[in-house]
Length: 261
Length: 297
Image 1 (tube, rainbow over the protein chains, first blue to last red):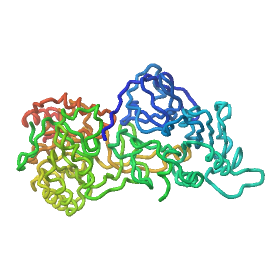
Image 2 (image 1 turned 180 degrees about the vertical axis):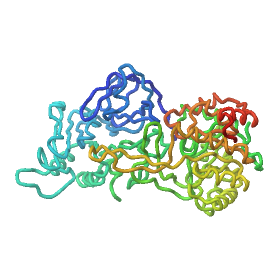
Image 3 (image 1 turned 60 degrees about the vertical axis):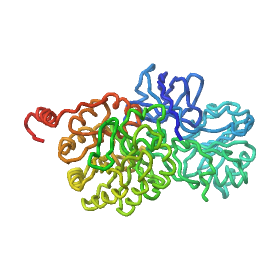
Image 4 (image 1 turned 135 degrees about the vertical axis):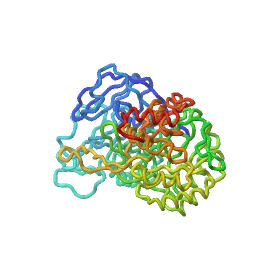
């Protein structure tokens, strides 16, 4: 199926540190939605994907690594971009307004879900980190967000991993019960985690919701995507449900497609 | 019109000398609004095998300065599925289609080639060899591909140009593509500060630095093989395409550099236009002048 690829010129507004990464803001006519991406030409031999962590009518903000070429650009510099590309998070597939949304993320991938913080009247967010020091300050989140913190070592919040079972030391509560409660409550759940965890998380969703609708649970999958149109096969991966190209079939997939058959 | 297979009974006529390289442009349905296919000479498809091939595992892209290494495992659904899914698209393209077949075993290749016979607008086969192919096996593969009745182009690996190009030309290949990308290794950078280089990636090397290597191969072999030569490797401007044509290339293929600038195909096609290549004598004279008499062609 032929896909029209939009070609735009964006304008860099700023590039500033946001430890451990940098934030860059680009103004352009059509900004990417949550989970979609742009391929930007920063002078390297291949274009680089930019995923939005904030979106408004005039443009978007994305994270880049320290030392990235975008961090060397002056404000006002023009950047050649292709996109928006790919399939992002799909929140309006039911035909009625979403009332309750659950977001689940590793702390490293958390910014990818930031554009969804106010996508529904009631949004709950579960953030998982290895230890307390990695957890962002709760003041960084909107007050309307129902925040649940999980750490792998139990040093703060619930004891992870989210999909884990078993007993917990006295005085510490496992995340599992809390996650199950929120999965029962929500109308849609969006994940941004290590892809190796998706089969177990899909099994958890299947266990709690029995027969979830397609796209009830959606998962973000990060990959190298030099072409963005599905011709280079660099991002082709095998999921239990079949082969997909992350750049055009994703980067957001139905979590249940990760479920082991 | 350029006929790159004048000795074949059907020939392989191209309106222009510019085409995408195998593995860089899909099967004809990519970039519909960014690339005007009617300006090109042909469409070379992504590599196809007789049977389905799965993608490689792990990371497949490593970038280093102006070059990058790609290793995909050439995944494809197999020739039967490709033909089923794309034959209608191919039939309506404004340019002829050259199907790139992965040349591994003669028996499989013969079956794959025969499935392409008689398809509307499929005008040729390009063979992709592995780096380790022996000259004898390469000829067996060439003979197997001829069972498909279409003109056969051999895309010769960078490392094997000197052995395979003249050998295949002697055995009657219709055209030669110089060259498949070199194999190379790049480090995969990790985010772990304790171990910044955790692994390495071996694969196909792309980048503008391939262009002088391509010119070197062309200067050694174009005009000496007795068949048409198609240039491929690091071409990124109309001037570079013309440089290849002046050295005797009948056509040029644009490789993975077009992922960054898809419109490069049209820019080069417009820039090259109807080429007026130098005569062989003029090209040799130009090169001698460049080498200042220190090296002969």
